[in-house]
Length: 233
Image (tube, rainbow, N blue to C red):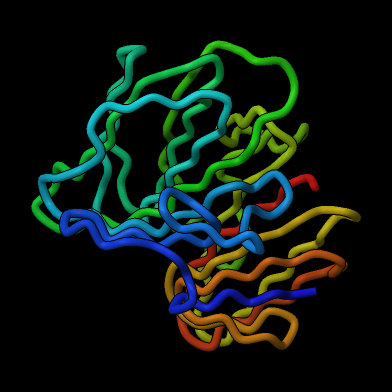
């Protein structure tokens, strides 16, 4: 099953400094049919104006992944962490028992991010934050695990949940495959480009909610950049 959620069907709001699109119910956008996908709870597509951002605010009990599509985001939190994450790279904040953070576009140009929230499992722990560069060349023609809570996923940024976040870049005509485990819920968004997933077309920033597909065969119609979440039910 592949349920396509076209970009122009997403909820959201334009706050001037922030143009936010929501793949799932979030803030003032509520759709009982779009409350999440397995353990994946939020996928926001945010466009942030230069010199603006989210002032300090609290989070708890959530794994929050920020994938930078264009520009860069600067993070500060109540643990004293501060870091700048550039396009193509990823940061993970495990909110745990509670943390305050701020995210700013300190750049002269617009920043565009995907912010992904996944429900944690297991014991509540103290909060943490980390970021890591993932040069696009490493994921050319293949999926690379960016963040994961699944054993054996190597040096990906850690998640406190049974899920992984992956990225891939494809040249026009290139194909990549991804095996879906039994009972898993996959959600994929092309950050750029147009692809076909098992014969179903996805345009840039469309979402695909996928389950009960053994293998995903993804072919790029033009140069594409993909972000995929594989989560427990």
